[in-house]
Length: 610
Ligand code: G6P
Image (cartoon, rainbow, N blue to C red):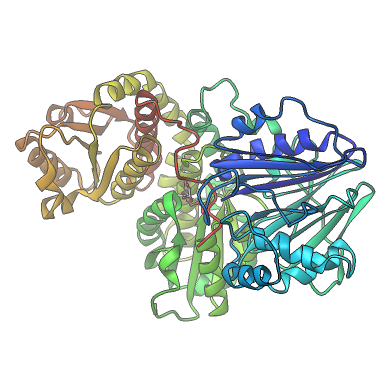
């Protein structure tokens, strides 16, 4: 949902900021822009472009030297993706430039006031009011004071970076509701929406909280709250490397991330399973262990792929921890009167840790006095810092918009948590050992699935012409069906619906014919016979079937047109395996249909608007 970067220092600021937004392109890519100053430049160097950042780069054939720059990659909320609506936005006399991530909710009102005062607006964005509001206060104090004062009039969310062409040695940035961090280098300083933009320059970062601002100069930085109080904040160290955010020989980030699954599972499990005792160690939950003993109900809130992981979590927690679980779309959590008592705990699942709906759900749960837990991949992200306690995924940076490895790691964390909470209750060490042993064996099993990549690619070639797909699964495989359908929709723009297999006869079966294929997860699990009946129902209507079956199953394939095999594993963690062929299928379908896999149209990886 838009990425912002600002730089002040000795390197060419325009080049550094441009490189930074390229690493944030996953946050939005419908248009982009950059502005830079240097005391030797008579005018600010401003360039904007519609489309991916590559088109902005093409416009930057000669880049002047600049000591200070801000840049933006956009995912449109207010105003179409046009050059006029692309950031940076500026005030009437092109003195103040602003990049913004978030939504200024009272922009219509502010625009009215400012227009009546004579300010001229040239875009259809909410952001432009910020530039004019700041311009209006110029001369009354420092840039920092002026920005602070302007923000007093604003409602909504923002992560902003502001520069003043008449004062090229200062960059001011502020946040409320949208992520922002400060990168601390040697005589160079950054602001960015995400550490990916700065990690090749520095690993030292400071995460800003809501209602905090930073003033960067070539000599250092100061952080204040909005009441002007100077803050002493901790400097965190990023624990991953730039190499992890590169494609590493793969064609696409999505492909690379699917193939990382074996290592991701190892990293997520790493040091957390004490097999001999049938125990799980989750350091992040230890501070709330006492409270967890008393929890009698969990509500899991999440969006998109993380929501489907939550559905698997429900089955896992209910089976292994014997605690009832409800799963809520985070965007709906606040809108109904869910009766909650003090023994309900709310778990947020979020890869990015920045999804606005999930964050708001957690804030609501905290307001109600509930224990909140996070399952988050991005260390130091807003949700990770907002919850009382949590478990990090350790999946490493996920760059492709369509989530794959993060989903795998979320399922692993949920299984670990189910055992951890189960062992506080009735789950015996021996019962725990069964699932834990299977978890430890997952990486090798995933490798076997990935070896079928060429076969899945060939299959996608055969199915690429079909415009609709139905994905079916029961029990643990139902969320897998939902996730498989979502992957296909997201990146290949093929319509796909996920359904609990048993529900097929209550509607979806009406659409089945020879041109409407189904993907059925038909493992030899506790619901196998019933799923097999559903496959027969499809076949009776001449529907094509792609079946995900267990290794060694010679029978189920007879009811399918194509089969992909996955190794046998405890049912509760079977989604970790069965989803992988579906991720690969979606990937190859998208390629076969000529879609941009890593940057699907209309989507953004991190959705920081509600
Ligand atoms: C966006 C992304 C999805 C992701 C969802 C939730 O819609 O495109 O891939 O699953 O947000 O994101 P989160 O970071 O909270 O897991």
